[in-house]
Length: 290
Image 1 (cartoon, rainbow, N blue to C red):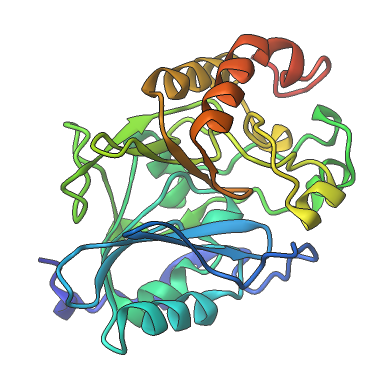
Image 2: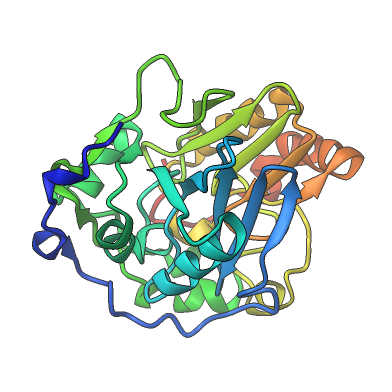
């Protein structure tokens, strides 16, 4: 059990973008959706935050990712409405550390004091030791891709409040789930999978909206794609990660961007995405090509 008496001083943690407003949104922003019985997600402007019920009927849950900047109160309010006034996350699991997935993390730590976990290879970006490469506007067409150089690429310094996930692929607070290394979008990107009902939380390893298109993001037009191109740094590993996800044969997927996809639509979409990834997703001219 996490010891809240440690009194982490979140004011000393470095977050270069915690007060940055992101001038993008979608029609589903602020509207939570139940995906399966114990999994709920909330779109914060353009990115999803996921809540997994512990099943103990105590208000305990696990939070996946931390939304865009300035959405902490929205994330907290939904937790209290759904899990009760004493709602408390047992952990915050980060699929990766890009600004739109850790934007409100300091306020959430300050409010809840929960431990934070990420893949070992993502820790340099979460402990103030490295920044991500700048966004590449030439990686894709679409207005969001063109705007991407204005997005923060800095890492965040959570110091030793963030720790590496267990090497055995287990997840603290989520006994029925396991993490899967799905790099490419970032070095330490993970997805989260539950075998018994084949539910996948994919992070940004795949998306269910064309994230580079302003219109598609606003309307949340549903279609399977690879990771957001403007921030993806290793396309060969991204391709391999899509193949890894397809091999899992998930029945439902919740991604970092876009609406959930289920059943035959998901199976067909993943098969086609894996087969045509090189032609459909990989930029022909990108400074982030590996």
